Image (cartoon, rainbow, N blue to C red; front, top):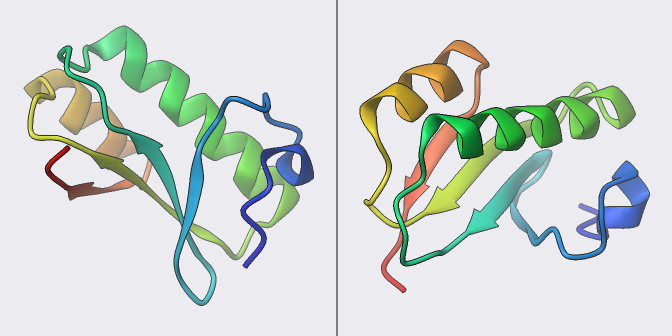
Length: 86
């Protein structure tokens, strides 16, 4: 699984992690809360990945400080959420 952001035409500061065969994670381990505006950017990143590789499953890797509206938006977009500690 290719984890190079440029392969998916993403900015170089985007962190990607292989979670398995055909499964990519967008890493967002930040201390501040992930709000809906952040979730919209994450969803756009996931769409870019799926445009390049339609069969890839995309998940968000983050800490537990994410608002419920963000979780709902990501679920609607088909993006899984995996929680980690910093």
